Length: 417
Image 1 (cartoon, rainbow, N blue to C red):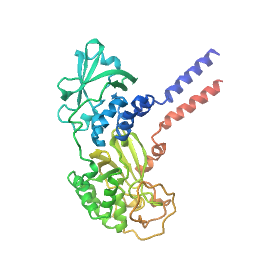
Image 2: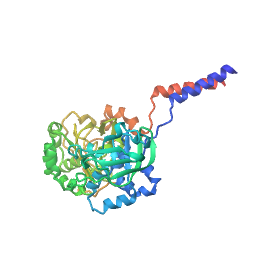
Image 3: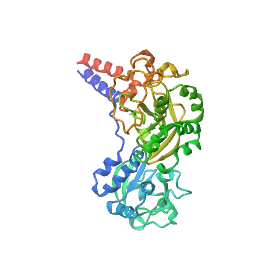
Image 4: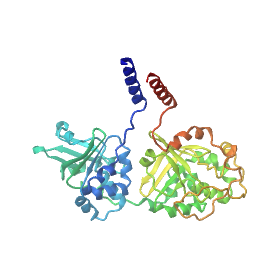
């Protein structure tokens, strides 16, 4: 009996090691939702897309301001992008719990902020001075404020030690740099911006297509562009020229998403994403998958990797990728490394129609290929290998060896009993 009890305990311990409970990441909006006095601050974390960036950080401090403090900021009638810069100054890229604030080495510290990380803050203007004052008070002020500390520590709101600390400070931190007017990305010339940063071939091709207007029409409401680099586009142009006019437009629109997706959002979410080319039965979607800081876009034909960021400011984000995205609606898997034949008209295949995030201005063409369930349209090896992960939807994953070991442990326990 004693041997059996020891064996049972061993199996239980082994099972816990093999199947550890999932660790929940912090969620700043959920934390602040429990405190209605920060509802306005919380709302703007969501509106400016700072919330997912905070959730994606492993060590961070959020200096929240109550609704009265936020009303003072909103009374200045700043643009949403400028408000994002100001709030970014209140997000420290280090952990400062209530206890640590009163134990700062030498009584003062300069903390880098998310505003500094954007690259928009010249010099040290994106840093915050934290000073432990006499009488147990702790003061906060922008580094550009020449030692003045207009905000005071009020209380700790919630802490997950060394992961996230949410504290309340008495007022918004004043910063002429953060509050400076910023041009809205949607008012930028998107093609000029891409041309100047390694995507000239894609931009020039876009200018010659009706797809350019589709991109411009979606910029104000939210737009993410994945532009292939010049080398990738040059190598692809033979296939591109073999497409019909509608096919060319659909392929270009396939590189746009009618929603603003920040890099932080892309790094924290896996799954299927609709595009500007999505239209009824023709899905024109791809899978976003992240592995640490590496984000890939997978079609059934190719896998492209995000290689850089041109713009990442609401409502527009533009990222460079190392390959042209090839949708299965236009290409067969075998054509990934061969010139694409010109598609001919064919009846539309029946398929479930996803909701498109925009109104299309043309009807997506049908490729001259075999039915979707034929071997020619099957996924490439790298896509097939990732199917299990994609279906997981970003959930918890276990290796096959772990599962087998767990099953054997349960079988051993059954024999003992």
